[in-house]
Every structure is written in C-alpha cells, then in structure tokens.
Length: 122
Image 1 (spheres, rainbow, N blue to C red):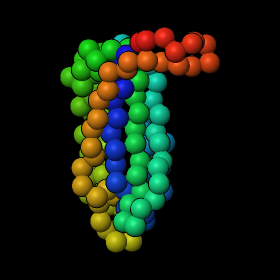
Image 2 (image 1 turned 60 degrees about the vertical axis):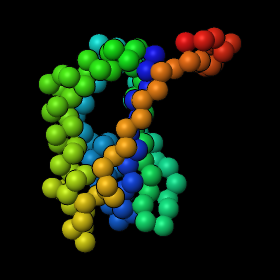
Image 3 (image 1 turned 90 degrees about the horizontal axis):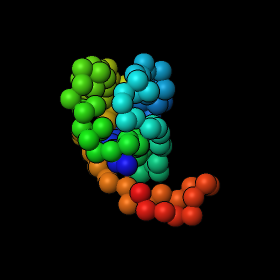
C-alpha cells in the first residue's frame, strides 16, 4: 500500500471556504484502479495558518503514479490549484487561501494494524 499526503497551510480567514471547496468538490477517485480511501484532515491552528492535510490510501505506489498521469488527476488538480493559488480568493482580504504551495509527502506502508488484524506487515 501507499499513502499520498498533501499539507496545506491555510490562512485562518480562508479556512471555511477551503473546507467547503473540498467538501463540495466532485470526485472520481472511487473509479480509479487501486484507490482505497481518502481523508481530509484539519490540524492545529498556528499564528498565521491552519494546517490541513489530504490523506489518500492506494493499493500500491504504481496505482498512485498511474492516477497522477490520468486526465482525471489533471482536471482535479487544475481546478484545485487555481483556487488555492489565488484565482478564487478568500474574502475579505482577496488573498490566496493558502500560504505557499501544498507540500506533498508519499509513504510506502510498512505495517497495518486495524480492528481485524494483529499488526501484520503490509
């Protein structure tokens, strides 16, 4: 399995529009081979931002990489990038929703422990 995460430093005044953008978006992830789950996470508030992270679980790194080369990926990220980079700006200050670009982190899953397992290696 493979975890793909993006971290977003969202301006506090843009937190609600940012959340709504994610919650109301059209997604085709369930149609993508190898997609397992998606979680949008809201983290701690800092002085100048609130940390958000998207967490997507894939069957394999290869499945994730195939998704990144798909037309669906290009379409989804073109729309999201324009909104966070400043095309759709938060009120009232007309600034981009985020401080800087999102930060991607990818992880190969070494171990999974859930309610059905006893800590087996992935």
